[in-house]
Amino acid sequence: MILHPCSIVRQKEYYRLFTADLVHNDVLHLALNEIMLFVFCSRLEAFTGSAKFVFVYFLSYFAGVVITTVRHRNQFKFSSAGLPGALWDVCSALLFYSLKRSRSMRRFSAG
Image 1 (cartoon, rainbow, N blue to C red):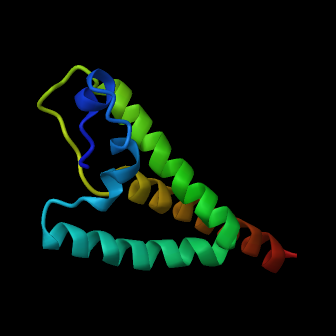
Image 2 (cartoon, one colour; image 1 turned 30 degrees about the horizontal axis):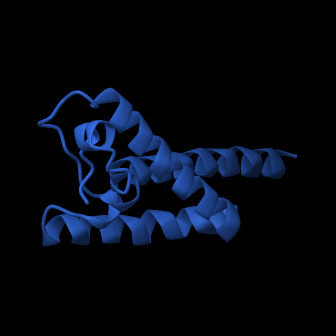
């Protein structure tokens, strides 16, 4: 279930593309991911709305998995667990929407 690009490419274990976010290295890894999801995802959803948030989240997740798989397809020792790509992209999107909102608020208050 862990993301192992070599297994995806050579052994055609495509299910790994969908299950990598379910596997974590330990309880601390899972807990930190859940806290980050709660803090950042709830704020991003407030900015974008539920439908756009779900689209951004899953697009980020699958883009990260595909890019990782292509980049590491020949590295047998490489594996990945958890949501690093999706969490990074959610944080980036939150920063983008925060800056966008901040600029529009300054324009509104300036005149």
